[in-house]
Amino acid sequence: MYDNMYASEVSSGPGIVFWIFYFAFIVFFIIVMWKIFVKAGKPGWGCIVPIYNNILQLEIAGRPIWWIFLMFIPFVNIVISIIVIIDFAKAFGKGTGFGIGMLFLPFIFFPILAFDSSEYQETIHIVSQPY
Picture (cartoon, rainbow, N blue to C red):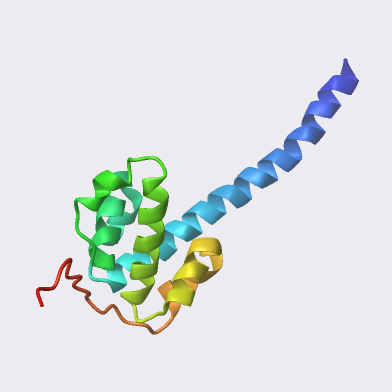
């Protein structure tokens, strides 16, 4: 009986450490996204509201709001997310390479974007241009 009680105490230790780091990471990422949204002139609290978060990201990236519906279509949402994240980086004066970094290493590139001296440059995407 005592062996099982001791085993459960030992096995719960790593789980607690995991959850502490997990919640610390979540809080850090909320702070990072809050800072980015404020830098773009959007409400910082918008980063914690699920669908509104994506709408604000579309506005920052300069993409139409109706793209939010494309984010609910399987496989299309992957392509749309890649386009939005690259445009998101470009809206702050960063290049496509930085946007790809935000895609594959968000825990490095999003904090860089949040705490560097880059400024938001409002983008307007023209869907079609008459010639």
